[in-house]
Image (cartoon, rainbow, N blue to C red; front, side, top):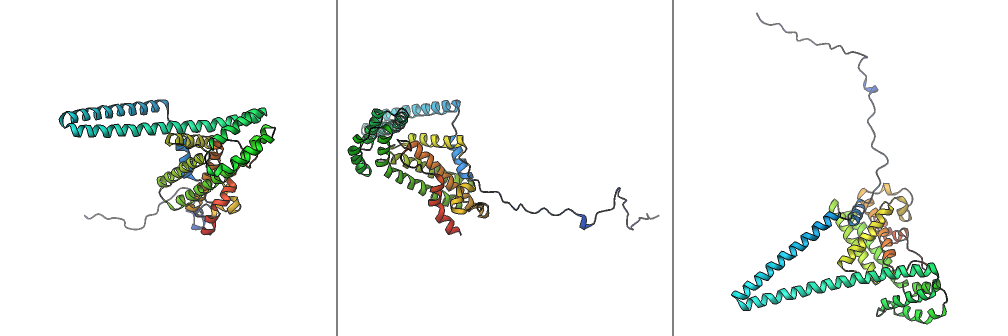
Length: 337
């Protein structure tokens, strides 16, 4: 007997109300009409990396690792040279001379780094002494600061005219604020202009590079490298002449200050001089990120000027990140438009 199967339609009874019609379906969510504003992640990441201080255990690890590696390399080089002298004297003495020359170069680099750190310390000491003389209205202390400042810039052609004017006019002033104000105007005025130009150039470079490099780590590396070069150049302009260790110390000091004060965040208010209110979100994502990174670089540059400058801003006007952004990035906005 063959099985009989029901091949007709099957009615499934659903509990509850009848099925909803297409008109009752929920609307498709619209995309967010207010896009996320660029955050300058490349500069924020670079600042966090530069400001991050390794733990004490990590410092001990790397210090001991470097000492052990140096010791092993020295012992191996010494044994290699002695064995070579024993087997082939002429070649062994030549290799020994090369090792001695290498050690002499390393020693010269160490001396240069120590001298650079000492020069940065001298600039910091001048800044503290100027603050103290201004707070106490100490005329004698102000003249001592001016004398050290003049010695710091002795031999530099860009300060020769200012040093001569300062030497002629300083004895006529009888208050600390006036003496230091004259030194600030005559000696540091041209240096402030040069430092501002460095900041503007770095802001343009970071804005351009991070706007056109799509790789995440590449734009962070480019922003960090540009900011390190900018801070080093600013230190050199004001007489710091920082070496490798000194440059890294300055970078960490500047970035730590920015991270601690929350200055690594930027919005429409920073870019308003060149964009107008509320236009940041209307730009392309990459171009907006570039502008924000450039604005943050300007903020880093202003902080670097304040750190590296041997005198506080009193008689001269302190540069602002907004004014630097207006000068440095306006051309980029016009080219995008």
